[in-house]
Length: 238
Image (cartoon, rainbow, N blue to C red; front, side, top):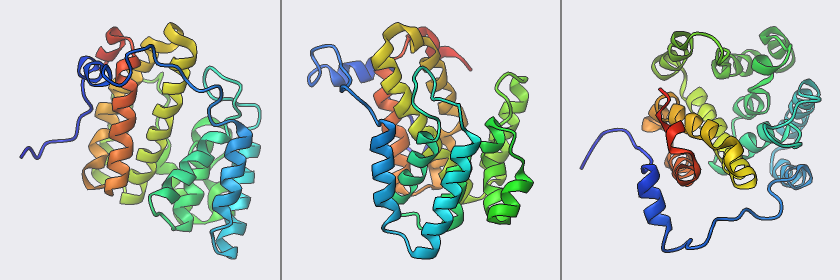
């Protein structure tokens, strides 16, 4: 049995595998994770948490929502806060109960995408949550490729297991959102989606080696589901 890293099927393999069950063009449901749907699910998830954790998570979600105010998910009018909340709920579904990890999930993009500083997170939520958010903060993708590759190499080699799990949850949710985007918009984002999927292979897939099985399955399945929808030419970016 191979002991190498898990890999999603190729675009061609995925198309062949889906053909018997999807002979007609794939169509997305009428709506996908509207803000109201996510809010309802989040409220239900919070109800399962101890009171002290619930108060902290409510405060962290409000902090993140305020910092991401005015931002939306790519190609839609979905408010950005939906994404970190889904990431936190994904961790809960994987059995994560650690409060700092869930706080970091809710805040994982605030340093990268807003004017928030790590010091603000430390002051409001403690050093461990701050450290996880810093580990989740990638360099600007417009910088030289060496900087981005260096970040993912450090994350793989030096990042704590909780940071690995957070990055897997983050990327899994992004892939699902991109799948919905491509299904809604067709060719408009297909090539970009393929490039993003290809980057996931070297950026995040190596992190699953020591991750819980639920996390491994979530990432690889999300990659495999997106693969037949992307522009093959966009699947060559390194």
